[in-house]
Image (cartoon, rainbow, N blue to C red):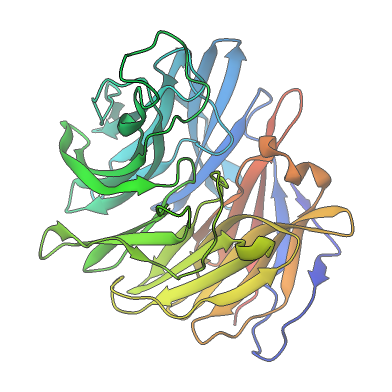
Length: 412
């Protein structure tokens, strides 16, 4: 591991007294010498769980999981492997844990010859052993299913949402076609929900929104009273605002979809740029990318009423941003946000602190390298363990490798 010197500060916002996010950044050694791509980071107990996929042959993929504490890795664990998986920079495996400590992970497998014909799979570990993977949607259509998010529910279960393309099946013709579908089709993508028991599989499921953006990642957060799930919606006139739905535990029912903000971004194709969310105590923070009138923004909003409503958005960054945001709450008023931008020919992975009152600290670059603009770099993912933020992404190459840093938070 190496301590990175000369942290780059881009534009201060200095009215708030908030500092730049990190007082020190440490690079963490790779967990493997083999191909590793599209990490996801999730805190469980006193460790950060990190997942990644490895391509070992043209048609063979392995899903790994390892824990890290401070800068020390556990031995990587092979979760599952198979052929004809769908391995994609935007639709990557995610991790969830139940309150009792069971682990659930997602991954995607091809269901047909078309590019976007693939199934979502869940695999769970209960009682120390991995159970057989299962497909939660079970609609049998050769369409796109993925982009899952999950939150603990009750003591042993997990509440999940995913994008479901069953309405896209044979949407161009009344007759079924033997030709592979290399586009999303003309039907509507849906947002589905499910409750999963790690031992018994899917318990219940249903639809939340019948027309959503086709391939933007989803996000989620929880409070004492509710779980809130975020996604990019899609209106009849192709306005694609970020929306959210809330599941109230006491009522055991879902709210209707609501826009996080009326950004008014009309775009004909999916921008492949989803929201991010996290909570601290009962405050929820959400970050997202939008680009109405070709003006890109990274925005943040907060909720203090368990996801019933959100504040007016705070603009974190504008101009020359590629989005691919993430957010983690630091305390009940403050969040750290990450995004990718491009300035004077350089691509940078940026971070910034913001509080619910709208105050921001200086933006701080944690990585400057033009490969970050490539889709192969994936979506940088963050998590927080104690007073440190862990942030991981993919360095494309032969082989692909995980880049992982640990940043010491500079808060008092």
